[in-house]
Image 1 (tube, rainbow, N blue to C red):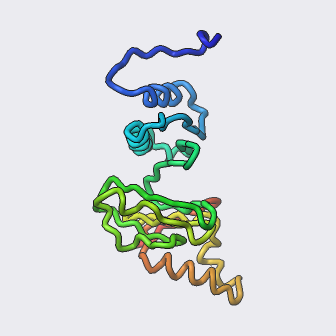
Image 2: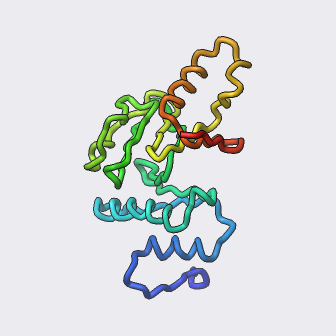
Image 3: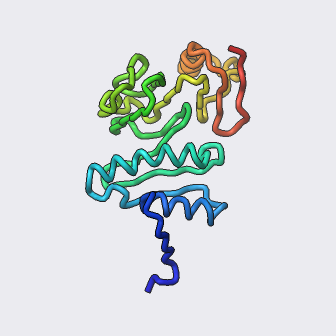
Length: 193
């Protein structure tokens, strides 16, 4: 029944997920979103191995730069890799775990019950079992980039009389001395550090 769409790849130096992912990237240049399902295999070792591949794919294919969103969906969670600062709508009260592969990375967070600002990510458990205290969370990675999503630009602050929340958000963002701020719907803004 499916013989016309089966792709055989005899390479035994990689796993099936990477074979499928490589096929998509090589044969479907218009792709902008990939949902990976059944990647946990109901085995912890399978799950951890495939989770680690998400970051490898991000690096190898420059997914964020190309606007390609990739996630791994299971019955219990949605897993994805980030390679820079971001703002995520997760929903207040939802579980959030951050697994960092580089213990030198500092992750400043907003919207989490337990902030990550002073966490040294030298073991995977240190970023796990957190919870969103707001509908959206922001993660600012230490390379100096910041993604603010739909937050109104700093220049518009005066147009919003007495908007203490907007002012507070920008005060916090600017306190981290960002190098580049990325907006969801406008060009990025660069700052001298």
